[in-house]
Length: 182
Image (cartoon, rainbow, N blue to C red; front, side, top):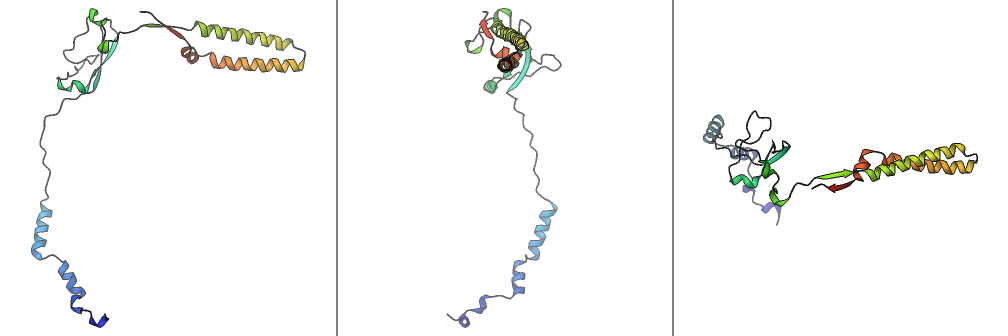
């Protein structure tokens, strides 16, 4: 098809296109009225839901501190509000646990276990290393042969490294033995 056969009536002059794109005066006044009085959100007060998942401190019958938890599973039951101004921050109406109930198994049927830690084995090991270090230092000071002195120095360095590693509270705690008391 040749260019001369194209319909030129479909093309509009630029000024006509601008006029078609402009809104009419009636439309402009409606937009201005909307800008003057914008739509606003309205606050509708609602009752606040009771919070769940709270922790608070209280003391058991023996006077030991205990942490209580208001779990979300108990949300169906009315959660208790903590009292203001108490040192324990226990919920209002919460009664201390009687002495006979304190010894009863807690939730899940688990009893409280008491254990004693024993670090005697670790202390003996450290004592032996210190004795060995002292012996090696004495032998090193009295050794006239240079080759044997280097060998003793290597042994002494190894014992001192082992002592630095083991003669601390973290090692004692990690390697202590525990026995049940009850």
